[in-house]
Image (cartoon, rainbow, N blue to C red):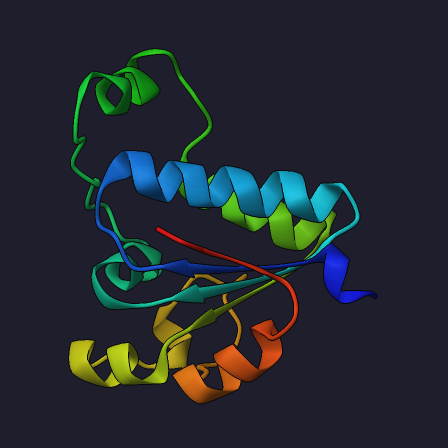
Amino acid sequence: MSDANKISIIVLSDKREQLQMAAMIASVGAVSGNEVLVFLSMNALRYFARGSDIHAPAEGPVGELIDAKNVPPFKTLFEQAVSLGDAKIHPCSMAMDLLGLEHGQLEDYVGEAMGLTMFLDAAQGGQVWSF
């Protein structure tokens, strides 16, 4: 695939609106024929632990409306990006170490840990988004 069809997304926020926007870009990008690479790190990674029931706090009224209006949750959108399109989601190896997480503790659609150097190499030449 050409670099013009490559979208790389760094997800590090713990805020609902930012997680939601990152997931929307990943899912729409993937089902639109783009190669999508998602790098989960810092405060975002804990939401992808298997069975996690913690809720991302809203920054403002739109974040509160996401739940009230039954918008598909960001984790569902990320999962759909992988299952319906060409998306790959990888956790940051450093954040995994910091949080004491093993790969088997993450959602099934999350791939193997990746270092920042490998992510930056894979992202080269395409769009890069950060949330």
